[in-house]
Each structure stands twice: as structure tokens, then as C-alpha cells.
Amino acid sequence: MNTAPGRWDGLLLGARLATLDDDAGGYGLVDDGALGWRDGRIVFAGPAAALPGAAADLADEVTDAGGDLVTPGLVDCHTHAVFAGDRAAEFEQRLSGVSYEEIARAGGGILSTVRATRAADAGTLLAESLPRARALVADGVTTLEVKSGYGLDFDNERKMLCTARRLGDALGIPVRTTFLGAHALPPEFMGDADGYIDAVRAWLPRLHAEGLVDAVDAFCERIGFSAAQTRRVFDAARALGLPVKLHADQLSDGDGAALVAEFGGLSADHVEHTSDAGVRAMAAAGTVAVLLPGAFHVLRETTLPPIDAFRAHGVPMAVATDCNPGTSPLLSLRQAMQLACTHFRLTPVEALRGATLHAARALGLDDRGRLRPGLRADFVRWRVREPAALCYWLGGDLAVSVHSAGRRVAGATPTA
Ligand SMILES: N=CN[C@@H](CCC(=O)O)C(=O)O
Ligand SMILES: [Zn+2]
Image (cartoon, rainbow, N blue to C red; front, side, top):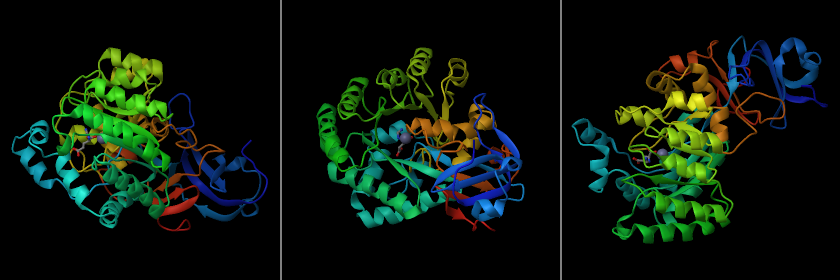
């Protein structure tokens, strides 16, 4: 039953609900739908005709959605949205023919953002990061993951993770923090990657003790860290009971997907070069494939992730922005969904499920990503009717209002 005792905080009527609460992989569409919530949780999601009483008797605030599409709030499950500076000059350099790997090997790339992020004080870092996070929320994001990885020493990794938490407080949405100490080798450890991994392993319990770490990640790649080094980071995470995820097989097949699956990881991210064996390992472990078409697009990659194999083996596919200053300066998860459709040939329903329930799963969260009684009242009212329109428009201002735990965090007032 959808009903619950007591008055609800809010009720949206006349909505075209895409509940995504459909085990067959559909939109779970409900025309002339109603969505009710109380104390931050959904209490009703279904046909208005099935409401247990007159709207005015049920809820304190009743809004007519006028036929607008209403979806679960979007979940951006892979970002590096906290950083200082930008890399526009590097973009220009890459367009003239220099590759991302060449720039990285010459001390640019990630390390140039490390220099800028280390130089920024906490207030500056927050001030620079907030507009990016605000843009993501304005386009429908109600849960945001943010990684560290541009500090690469204890104090600066801590500064990044604290800033990520402050972003959530400022915007009124949950922010999930991922410790990515093993993102790049900082200059002070040049020639001693194993020594750096020792340091990362030592920082992790201290950061975790402060409640700053929800998951642990690494960049397993020829310009990042080896499988053996990644394994040592994962061992440290496991010792603390922390879940792992991995930047896996982005530029080459390094067996990253199989490695993170071996640790029962939440997700393998990028996965352009993942082998069939890697896909099978992910399927067996229940590891989500996080697709990052923004980085694929900006780097003008040509090797597609094994989408058909993920489908065939039932590996859930999430879609995220990978918002970062180097490979994916992307400030809209809807735009990432669009790129996932055009570049990776996801269907619009796969893209929407990928940016909601599968993304939630990639963060280990099962209380959001669908419109269902009992789950968080995270939802977006859009000024379109067709769910496919979310992937169809390139840019634009489509969100009428964005709600986190029932509270409006972006867009017009609920009655607008
Ligand atoms: N691949 C590694 N990390 C980021 C890029 C970070 C950067 O270039 O600053 C990514 O997910 O694409
Ligand atoms: Zn990333």
C-alpha cells in the first residue's frame, strides 16, 4: 500500500511519473501520476486515481505539475568536482596534437591541477568548486559523488574531502566522498611509487576516522598505478571495511575491471578497454560499469566500452559526468546521458536508469534512484513530457524544480 498515517508534507499532482520502478528495465511510466512525501521519504508514487483521499486532506502543500515529467533525482556517481584552476590551455594543446598521456608524462595534466589545488586555501577551493556543483544540481543532480586526488598529501587530500562535505551542506544534497589518493604520483615521491602507496595506506585510516571517506578509488593505468599497487590500496580499504571502486581500463586493458571485481567492488569506471573476462568477473561480483562518455568525447577516444557484453552479462551500466578539469569539464549529467546515447548507443531508458538507480548502486546506495514509497523523496520535475527528451536536448534549462528529501534545492518554487 502507498498510504501512511498522518498528513504528508507535499503532494505533486498531474505528473507524468517515470518511476523507473520496473524490473523489466523500463521507465515505469505513470500518466496522471501523483507523488507524495513526508519527512523526506516518498509515501505515495502512483496513479492519482489511487490516492487514499482528497488531495487537500492528504498534504500540507499540493502542487499541480501540469503534465510535466517527474523522475527520480539524478545521481552523479563519478566526479572530481573539487579542484582549483582549470586546464583550458591544455585543451588547446591537445587540439594541436599532443596527447593526454604525453602531457601527463611531462608533468602537466593531473599534476598541474595538483599544483593549483595545493595552492588554494580551503575557502578558495570551496568558492571555485561551488558553482560547478550548483550547475550539476540545477540540471537535476540530488546525490553527488566527489573524489579527492588533486591533493596527493595528507593535508591537501583532507582539504579536498572536507570541501566536498561542505559542498553538500551548502547545496542541501548528500555528497558521497571517495578517497583517490592513488590518482597520480606527486613530485616529492617521483621514482618511488611503492613508497607513495605506503603513504596513501597510512593516510586512509586517519581520514576515515574523521568520517571523510565513503569509498576508496585508484587510477590503475600505465600513467597511474600498477595492479599490484592498486591491490595494496584495496587491501587497506578492506581492512577498514570500506568499499572500493576503480578507474579501470580507460586508456589500456590493465585487467582493472577484474581486479576491482575480485574485491567485490562497487564499480569499475571508464572501462573502454575492458576484456570479456573483465566483464564476466564484474557480472559475477555484481560490480557496476560506470560509463564516462564525457572523457571519451573530450579525449576523442575511439575504443568503445563493451556495451553489448555488459548487456549480455547483465552488468548494470551507470552514467556519470566525470566532471574534472582535464578530460571531462562537463557540468550536466543530462549532457553525459546524451553523450552516452550518441557515442555508446545507450537507449534513453538505459541512460536514465544509468543516471539514477544504477548510479545509486555504484555508490552502494539502495534508498534512492527510483520513485517508490519508503525511498528518499529525491525527484526532479522537468519541463518536458517524454523521458527521451532528457537525452535529446543538448544543454538548456529543463529542470522546473529539483528536490532532495522533499526539499527544493534548485529551480522555481514548487507552486511555480
Ligand atoms: N583518469 C583519471 N582521472 C580523471 C581525469 C583527471 C584529470 O585529468 O584531471 C578521469 O576520471 O578522467
Ligand atoms: Zn575519474
